[in-house]
Length: 59
Length: 159
Image (cartoon, one colour):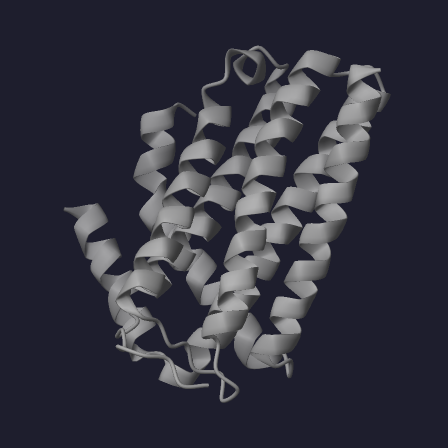
């Protein structure tokens, strides 16, 4: 799949993603604050994991 | 034409959703972006540990994912300012532009990975996996941009 093909599929992918997120949002009982808190925690964990991984790859 | 119609469907879908859901959608989408970044890091960790990906290629991918992660962190931080207790999302014009700039930088960064010669040189299955992850990540970040564009901005945010 080249970049042009990928870009052509983006609008339909965005539509699907929005649909999924809308469904997820409706299903979960979590508040926006709780979801942002979770996203913040996952982001912090990712940062630590990326730092550890880069240190290992450069060793 | 097809893209225009799909784009309109996206905008209509977002506009039709209840206003109070937008804060939740924004938050859930940043959560999903964080999940994709985590998956990408895990893939690189596994491939490089197994000797199936060079440290140079792994470093290139992790460096970009880390930058996208930092930008997602900025979206989360900004989101905490704009998501209202009732789940609504209120944005000033400046706030909207700032968030859209973060989205644009993030998608642009993610898309550089697809054409990175080190990624293009990966074995087929690995390249497809990384490419699909980046496409999903990029599309998810773009969906935040589409959501932000539908928000009617306010002059001042009263919490």
